[in-house]
Length: 132
Image (cartoon, rainbow, N blue to C red; front, side, top):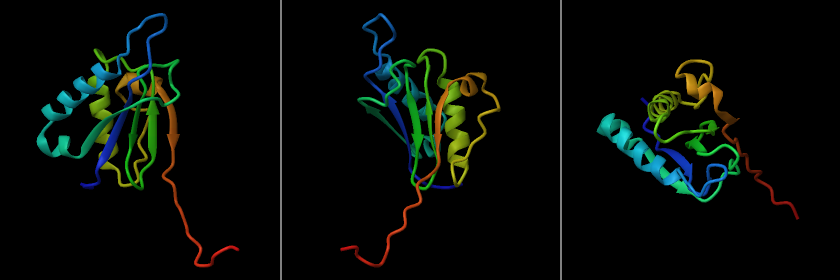
C-alpha cells in the first residue's frame, strides 16, 4: 500500500440554492468521523481541509481528492447526510492506486453521477539552461 499523504479538500463557502445553508463544515466533520471509524491506518493516510472556493457553487458540496503524483478528482452535489460512505469508498480506491487513476463507472452509485473533473497529475520538467 502506498503511504502517500492524501488530501480531501471540501469547499466551505458553497451554499444550497436559495438558502443560507453552507454544508461544507458539516461534511468535513462527518467525513473525518467516518475516516477515523475506518481505522487508524486508513485515517492517517488522509488530511481533510476546508477551502474557500473550488468554483463548484452550482453543485454544493464540492469535494476534491489529491496527492503528490496522483490524478486529482473533483466531485459535486455531495450531501453530508447521505454520501459519506461513497466518499470513504472512493478514498479507499484512490489511495490504493499509485497514480490515482480510479474507475468512475463502478459503484457506489452516487459517485459516477457527481464527478466535475478528473485532472491528471502534473509532470514538470526543468531545463538545465537559463533563458535570458
